[in-house]
Image 1 (cartoon, rainbow over the protein chains, first blue to last red):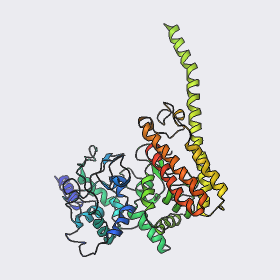
Image 2 (image 1 turned 45 degrees about the horizontal axis):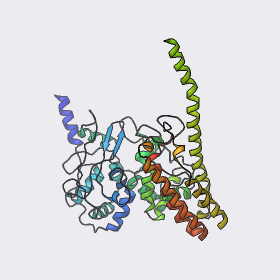
Image 3 (image 1 turned 180 degrees about the vertical axis):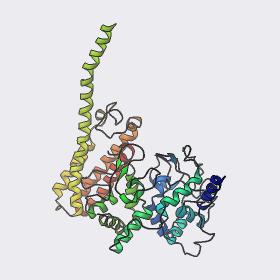
Image 4 (image 1 turned 90 degrees about the vertical axis):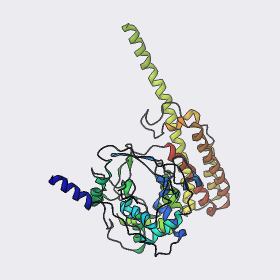
Amino acid sequence: MAALCVAAAGLFVTRPAKLPDGALDGLSADPANGEQVFYAAGCISCHAAPGTTGPAKLTLAGGQAFPSDFGTFIAPNISPDPDHGIGGWTLSEFASALRYGSSPDGQHYYPAFPYTAYAHMTDQDIADLWAFWQGLPPSDVPSQPHQVGFPFNIRASLGGWKMLFMSKDWVVADIPSPEVERGRYLVEALGHCGECHTPRNALGGLDTANWLGGAPNPSGSGKIPSLAALDWAASDIAYYLETGFTPDFDSAGGHMAPVVQNFARLPAADRDAVAAYIKALQ
Amino acid sequence: MYKTIALVAGLALLATPAISQNINGAVKARQGQFNVLAINLGVLGGMAKGEIEYSAEAAGAAADSLVGVAMINQAPLWPAASDEMAIDGTRAKADIWDNWDDFQSKWDALGTAAAAMKVAAAEGPDAIGPALGALGGACKACHEAYRAPAN
């Protein structure tokens, strides 16, 4: 009986957080900045339908599979379709998803959706992104369920996970310049680079003591390289983010290909800022 | 019966070196293609970044090399059972063989980008940068679909 009370209290304390209705409505939204945020945050890379190329990638129909130690997650339809996507959401519901990993009907999202990073987005960027979102093409492809078995299919348990592994603080506290600060925002908030480039503990939380230190590829084959130990010059890093070419002129592939495509669309100053942040880690 | 088993085993032992030599040669050749591409991309990239002095002759020679590699017939270099699940030492995904037409069209796209680089190389260092971007896009498109992660 006592155990039940503790469990119920635990579920109550870790219930999904939400922003109050109309929370960000006072901000004046700029969809042009929203487009930049869209590319930096890499929504396309996970939510475009598999096999699409070019402008068709803007239709965020979902369907890509992400294998992990906890099961296989299938990206949902997040196009502005009112029935099959998120077209019926409000701005505060959108912000609650990004900031808290909470759905409009009060459920936790799986952290395959990198809200632990997006939690650091500014209110203005979220409002701008939502304004840009309204112009995206809708898709009526239904979202598919995740292939996650017991006990990981108990969404309520993610409340405890969030309590353990979400933080309001930046990972890197020591910021020597405004350029590195911009780089930190692009890496730790929007680009969510840590999600792949940082190793995880047994519960799937990021091992921030080894921030950007490289990790096994979650698909099971291969390794994702360390950025903290990357011995490239800052200009090499910026060039790679623009073209996909390494200093030896190998070309990016796998999951980095869409990242480079996104970063190529950002201003050069942003790529330089990411490079400065990475060099500042070393 | 045992004679038959011994005979089949013996033939299998004899056959294996011939098959694997064929595959090894193909793997070495196709990886060599990529090395040649990287070296010539390095020359052009150096000019685009201003690290190497631009010369129309050197840029043209590098572009010619890219065009030359893109002209190589790919089919003999990708024999069956030379994917990363079948052998070590390659990152070629089995998807290549399931989608050969798409693979071939991505290779052809490399040729198109290389031809554009040939034109840009004669124009000057400022033209090389964008042409290099297009080449990077061609490389990335194929790597994204058909190259397995590094170990």
